[in-house]
Length: 255
Image (spheres, rainbow, N blue to C red):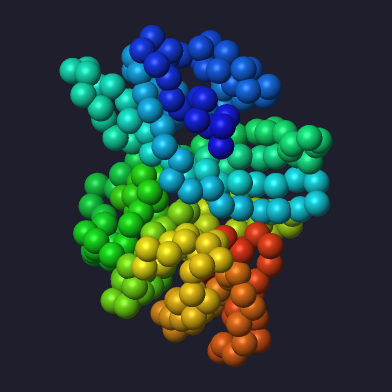
């Protein structure tokens, strides 16, 4: 997270790749990572960045993917802050005394569609569904499948929830495997907070997370992952749990 914060936030006059390299180097990280900052390197005289949430995109014994969801404010032409943001797939390799950041993959949602479909418009207008900047852009791009959008709307009938990752900013492949992830195809979304309670917080009622997972399955998800292994389901493998999903609820859909 510190590398992303160093790239995406700077004091007056601190814009540009060269200044970002210096900030990253001051953390003891590879300064070349600054060149992978993409949309976080706005041409603005100053910027501030807030990490909304950081969740696992994958976890192995010697490597990991951490999805850093962030909001950014950059100074506009008149000096007033302009709100933007991204989600960055941060890759790490095991090392001592701390793991090393090896690569950054910022979200690339694509351009907004000329006319977003009905479920996309309703998702964007639903106050009980909170989307970070990259996910908003995903929905506006028209590249999120209707099954995922309709499921989000169904869940919003019973829960207020906050999405961490939708399509962009997620690894293209299931981490550590060679099969495509549902996320980049617009067929999955991850939820990090339900009714104001972070999924990762031990104080969050287990019954709340379980009911949300079961509601996601009832809304059409063929595989629902979370911090606890649930029984039942329409298929033997509809629910799953592993260390990667201890901090969020994953809901995937079929094309």
